[in-house]
Image (cartoon, rainbow, N blue to C red; front, side):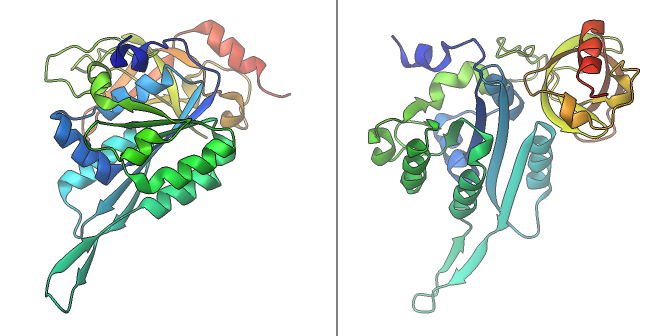
Length: 290
């Protein structure tokens, strides 16, 4: 059985809750080694198709002033449901040699968040090949968490590869599912969402999206257009008063929606949609406590 088959063979969605923790600095060198870039919208869709709910955290050092490229990348991550933690790179002068050392490690922040949020996930997914995380993985494994590490051969520490009870997956096996596509190139279906289209939808066009984030005013959905997609509370088709939208939405919900409005004024296009599934509206209404 091939490694790629092992990596993608489980197409049925699991019941568990997953948390993805990405060591941004390490992933930068991994992508450069692989020779292709990750599409974080497709990455989120890939895992949404395999777990009942997904949280995603991205840790990245930042320079001052923040470049427009870095700011744009952060906006893309946030638009697709990632929580971004950054820390300014420090310049430390070695007085003996005169060398300037750049320091911007966020390993501690990642470990603290992973441990403090343990009750929120069943599966811990780490994107890093750094052996510094082995103690964290051991601690989570002892607490019954399912552990998966994504990196690539040649850039992954031997301690990670040798640690028992940890599933290691080479990112090279996921290229067809999570890599950025050239303009006009179509992706393969991945997870529960439609494949990337390389275009924006037409008004009235329908698609099915998974829940990325729930706010008091609406639901942010995954979508095949690499856009920020909002299903407003007022477009859920519920006649009852909704006091707490968060309490009636489940991360495993799928929403068939139609496009109501498209806004291209921002760097990341914004799509407003309305629900197109009457049965789902009725299901949501039934969840409202009288």
